[in-house]
Length: 138
Image (tube, rainbow, N blue to C red; front, top):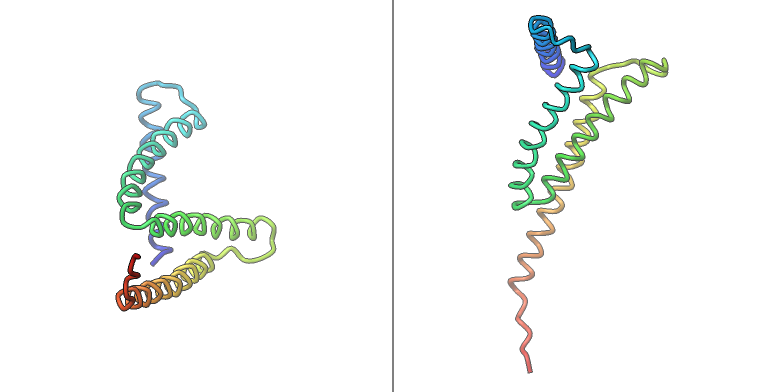
């Protein structure tokens, strides 16, 4: 499933690239590949920044843990790709998309255990906190 999604995204990006190159040529902008990457990546980054910023602001009101998880999951995804690309370049292993998926499943599994522990601890704390008698002030 993930491989099919990655292939589809790659095909879409190739079509977008071809369309941008045709627009560049059609308007005779004379922008090179590096110039187009500069502009398109900058515009995409700003659009993504405003979208992510809005989402993270809402999440931060609910739980900073959710923001931290999204950040860590993103970094681990990039790291997974970097490791696989590094293995391909160095010849130290086989570049395999399934390895990335397995690593990310590990991140999700360990985070699920952590979340269950936190929920249990919060539940116990809430139960013990309700049973305590308030200290009287003298």
